[in-house]
Amino acid sequence: MAREQGSSQAVPAAAALFAWGANSYGQLGLGHKEDMLLPQQLNDFCKPECVRSITGGGGHSAVVTDGGGLFVCGLNKDGQLGLGHTEDVLYFTLCKSLLGCPIQQVACGWDFTIILTAPEREGCLYCCWAEARIRCYSGFVFQWGTGLASSGRRLCPGQTLPLFLTAKEPSRVIGLENSKAICVLAGSDHSAALTDAGELYVWGSNKHGQLATQAAFLPMPQKIEARCFQNEKVTAVWSGWTHLVAQTETGKVFTWGRADYGQLGRKLESHEGCKPEKRDSFLLCSRPQNSTPSSLHCLTGANEAKPDQASAGCSAGLVPPQEHLIRMGLASEQRLKFSQSRKVSCGSEHNLAIIGGACYSWGWNEHGMCGDGTEANVWTPKPVQVLQLSSGLLVGCGAGHSLALCQLPAHPVLIQDPKATYPSPDAAEDPESQEAMDKERN
Image 1 (tube, helix red, strand yellow):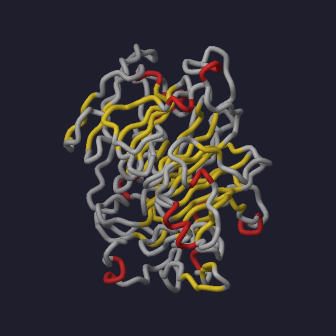
Image 2 (tube, rainbow, N blue to C red):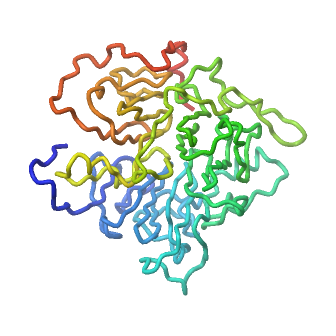
């Protein structure tokens, strides 16, 4: 992307919303179900410049506007769109059951959706209190979509599942009444919420130890004990499909969950997941090594920001559009001051982080998203050598791709060999066999 030269002021370009890729269920919002290999501009279901965040699940998409409105489209067989029916929706459609309940944030699991409500504001575009079907306040968490219910019934026999796991319209997540959430997350089959007290709650499937508990399934939020984070408050958290990354108040970074692609950034004796054991009519997991949050010393300090940059880290592997859009021609010191600093990001099974201005990557690398010039999985965080002469500003991961916003050096130097050895701060050898790394993903 070329940067405009000259004036430190620039006229902002008109905003537009584009979608492309898989579209089997109409998740692109284009009115049909044909896959699109090239970006397609969407019709203005809302003003593009008012889009606050975009995210997607297994086959559905969600958009939150500045006014707090939630628009959804795509696969809906499990009621994951929250519209009260199970028909697929081919255009972005306003979730009317949330009228009067402004949304701060949305996250999509494989077949469910979770939201965090925003503070009440005057003049909100969709604050129609007279028509509101849900009255809520700042920090409420709602979830809907029945995708997790089958696993819950199988793994929690005899238990009545809470409504938010079986609802096809927004239902408040119970178990968080005494806490105020500041961000929510969704993995493939799990959910998480970070509170203003620095506590992390998790629920859903624990197949890969991502809930840091012995239970195979948590139907309601359960707090991960502070001792798991060396008795420090959690200040930021990110989620991949089956693993999580959290940062504490002193800058320590912890990882846990699925580990068979190196996504935890640390050596394990075994990459086996959670093996359920039946005991007294419910299922427990023989606690695997990867289910305990463990600190990665080489990542300490990642995501640090100046006071005017700070915000709760929260990710499900997608980059908010405001982090992509930078007005050309701003002075360099202005470009560094983003309202939401993203210096750690999780893809489905890989991660990116910025430490001391250097971009690091680790985890699943089948499509080269770790940026080392190979397709071999990366088992410990390593600098992306091609970017070693650039200063990393922001990073973002898709399921199988990576993005990084960098400040280029004044005199760019071509890196001839991206496969050359570049030492990791952990200096750990890759102990896993290629056979293990290439096993079929499930």
